[in-house]
Length: 274
Image (cartoon, rainbow, N blue to C red):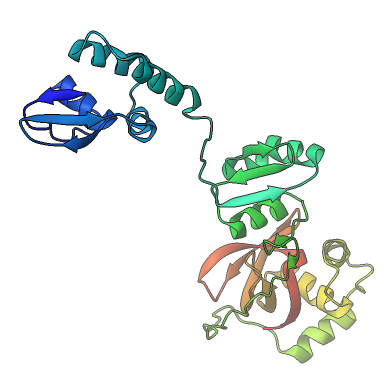
């Protein structure tokens, strides 16, 4: 198609001149001179469709330039529009693969809504969150996911041990280890101690002595040292003063962070006197 004068500038989908916008976005400049020659191709028409043009809009603009649009050009525009968008690209950072009933359950789970699931196939869900975030949220919701290394093999997660910060001085007066042992021996045994019994049901890691020590600290709101695994998998040690037990958590003052924190009983790996 020929058009007199210099070629119009690019318009990025919108221009003050509809003629210039159409030719710039839907055709390639083949030659320049007294008249500029534009060549339409599948690629150039697809570019116009990517910019928001429709087949009807392109043909209407062409007829405004030349009422008799060649039939091959009419076919070219309609053929390009027919297949345009047949392939769609979505941005996904993490894919979760599960059997179809479980994938349906995950997609509907209220606790996982923040993952922004996209149902890619009946057995594949996509999320814009990182794999680490998806794993953590699935585990917090009670599921047991594993990390795939991309080849179908399970990637073993090795948690790095978090450097232990220096303990801050504990202002609350604590007990000497010998005094703790004496009081525990004089008091009810762990099996009879209601708090110790409750803690034993929540933790499968602690020894009876550690459970008694933690129960003693919880009942008297006295400081104790714990070894604790955080949600990321790292292990840290800190001094806490327990305040109350509710559900699977202990609310305590953390002397390391100088703040009140909730600690999951099942994540406490060891207990020693403060």
